[in-house]
Image (cartoon, rainbow, N blue to C red; front, side, top):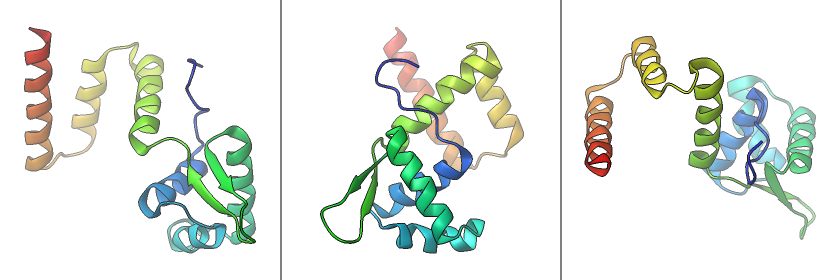
Amino acid sequence: MVKGDLPKPTEAELAILRVLWERGPSTVREVTEHLQNERGTGYTTALKLMQIMTEKGLVARDESSRTHVYEAVATAETTQRQLVSDLLERAFGGSAQQLVMQALSSQRASKAELAEIRSLLDELDKKAK
């Protein structure tokens, strides 16, 4: 693990992080309400996962009131970047081209997404010159 990197979250932990990124700091009950329909996650399961995530350093817990409030430690972008870097090395041997080709061939991108990708590529091309 690179210095400063947090442990990689599991699929269930990522679901909780997505709720925290969307809602901001939240109680276990609030997270459970969001996950109940999506994943069928119950309160005690969410609580246990969030306790583990606190120990791993993925979330911070504010214990200043009776109801504890949890907040993601890293931003969605930071976590996504870390996960993509890991995937890039493990599955694609460090080849960004192969990663992008597989991503674009596995799921259809909208015109807006393709335009944004082109814009990013143009920007990266300008920086490389």
